Image: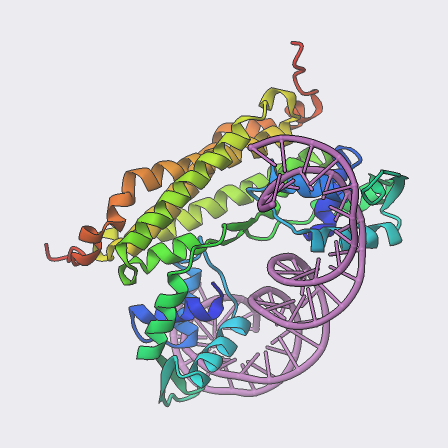
Length: 180
Length: 180
DNA sequence: TTATCCATGTAAGAAGTTACATGATTGA
DNA sequence: TCAATCATGTAACTTCTTACATGGATAA
């Protein structure tokens, strides 16, 4: 699963420009896939060279021509083949959680700041996903949307319920020993 | 936040070999950070060259000498500086969810297989985290452990409750229209 | 007897990010 | 007037994964 496959996937929903693909990856797909323009544009060029997508150019005034990509039949076959392979494990990298693991080393005002930002971030992400009507989506995307909501809600609730562990008082107090 | 920082972090808990650091990243830290030997060993060499860690070698029979690394004072300062920077966003890449988004394209026996494997995977991860006694951990690690449990449990529960969306019947039926 | 654990390391290459370059339009 | 949105692309660079190399001990 690389950017090329993800581009094919987004194009399987309907034709799109590189810019629009990026917007999709910032929106409803963001909780399980991210990619930058610097990855997407070269990926589309490569897919085009391999005949997995086709382009249609639409002139615009003041902006570069819009390049609207569409999945080809070979592209659809390639996507199917790629999606049929057993999935690798999820890869997660959270700087926030890494900081929290070593929170004993940090100044408490910094921690409070990081927690507040994280809570705001949850609200933003949740608002974005809640703004999508699941009933208009096909089952696969409805499933993925619900998954994102479930996980963000769990993270949000957990942080709100357990942020006291990150307070200065809790952090400087020693861990309860097994002998207690 | 790169492998070097993560190595410093693990060493802030206590001295360890590269092999042991890898085990930590496969265990209690796995839900927010992963790294391979090919990343860890060069990272430790670089940290040693920069004086951020020290080594002590312990001869072994039949195996390469054990290299036990310990955090130096400058290493601790470097770790603190790195952890004090505002965290970047979480990066998640889930092949499983990508497959589920485009599940309409897939054969149903394949989907059933992927779901079953995913459920097993959740059980394995949850069992691993539940095997750790939170009361023996300092607050930061207790927080991160609980976070991992909360998120895995949410994912597990969501998949069990909504896997019917991935069934052949649900997938071939059209999405409910807004006009319904 | 076959795989897994222990233990270190290198090297090639994949796969990406960040920063740059360009520039009109629109909203605050 | 400042930032954001739209729109494409390149190039340098970082960062990591995968595969290889070595090999004894131990458990199934």
